[in-house]
Amino acid sequence: MVLLGSVVTTSALAKSRKKQQRTTVVGRRDTLSYEDSRRYAYFFLEASRQQNAGNFSGAFDLINHCLDINPNAAEAYYMRSKYYTTLHLDTLGLRDLETAARLQPSNSTYQESVAQLYIGIGNYDKAIDAYERLYATHRDRDDVLEVLVQLYRQQRDYKHMLDAINRLEQVDGGSDQITMMRVNAYEMMGDTKNAYATLKGLADSHPNDLNFTIMLGNWLMQHKRQKEAYSLYEKVMRLEPDNAYAQGAMYDYYRATSQDTLASGMMQRILLGRNTPAATRIQFLRQAIQDNEQEGGDSTKIIGLIDKIQQVVPTDTMVAQLKVAYYSLKKLPKDTIDSALVQLLALQPDNAGARMQLIQNNWGKDNWKEIAQLSEPGMMYNPDEMVFYFFNGLSRYYLKDDDGALDVLKRGAAEINDQSSPDIVADLYSVMGEIYHNKGLNQEAYAAYDSCLIYKPDNIVTLNNYAYFLSVDGKQLPKAEEMSAKAVKAEPKNATYLDTYAWILYKQQRFAEAKVYIDMALKNSSDSTSDGTLYEHAGDIYSELHDYKAAVAYYKQAQQRGGDVKALNRKIILYQKRIQKSK
Image (tube, rainbow, N blue to C red):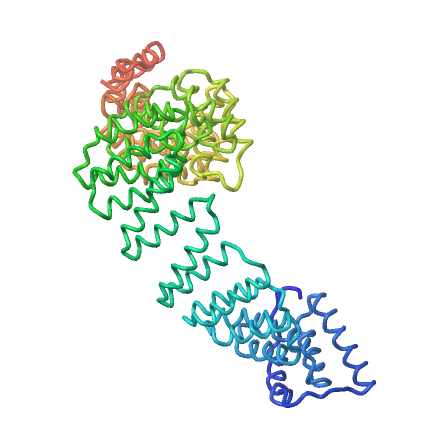
């Protein structure tokens, strides 16, 4: 049945509700006349055709007409129930589905659909009845019996749950899983005698698989029969000294009986055992950390323990990962954490998280060479991680390798997809724009900046730089002003952003407004943030306002801050002459 994707018309629904009253099945009509049978077949086929064509309203009307012809047509009720369900008329949908299932009790699709619907609305008693009817006609279906086991368990009807398990065993034959289901049923009934006998029978039937013996011991522990459990654990330990499951069970026994020294010794045995499964080792290492934290959190003990474990299993990546996590949790020195991260990456070079953490730890040190070396393998092992392209390109940019940086960033841009972080993509294009501008490729730079702002319209650095470069070129000044204003609004005391906005106003010959913002820029600047350009801009703005004395003073400050001495000297001489003339 195709998924219904349209809404049946209101008029059709109203007609159907009226018809529902007279099509309710009271008694089964065994036969239709030959003519009615042909009419029914025609209209049902047409309903199916209209449904497949997407004309759901028409199909709905035709199905109702089919039921007028034959009120005992199970397939028509089933089809109409889908429409009601799509319209969220669950009561009507359930009624039609129940009718279809009652009319054709041997139809597994109808029976299973109505049973699943009962489960969906939480009517487990009716769900049980439906599944029992389904089983009655399909006694080979173990999946139906498995559902019945769960339903009887839900209803706490353990007697019938056991009956369903027995029937399941008849279909599938005996199995360890079915035996454990029976044990669980006895447990829920409180029948510990049969639960123990069944579990012991399972263990006895597997003399070469001691895990069942341990399972029996665990059951005994849960039921306060500790001595019997210990006897079983000890037996397994004699036969298989390296059995991690038995060691874990013995550890739990020591803990439960307050034998802390023996428990600690067993934990050490598990942690330092060469044959201990990796998952078990990690489980107990986490337990050791938790115990240590409860005892005061002496990190030196855990660090020493991890070192011992790594001597036993030096290539275990799970231990290396937990080591990094523990070092970070305890906020050990960054150099110590970095050392653990390097060790982890040597074992697991495709661990993107560890590599990223190591890059971030080096970021604050401005160690661009190290960051470039760390991010290079990241692009190879995790080619879809944009962050490695960004950091590699950015570090190369800071190392004055513009060509290498641009190559990496372009490769990163080729990997952008719907899952890429918008912030990282925006930053990647922002750096590309800077490099293109440095190379004198302004059109490419502006295209990169436009791409950046598509992914992150509020990227303040790009808004400011893009605006400033446009103003220097004398192009698209209204657009430049709009972008610069956003940057100033975001950081109203940023001298660089204020200077850009003032310069754009200057380029538009709005000198009085430009003076307001250049004064704000000068007020918010400091020796560490200001350069000759800011003071030269101030001089140019003041000169247009005929304050030549102030302009000359700003030009001289621009020279002191690394400005172009010759160019500034020409301006100084020009405006000094004008000062003289004004006198």
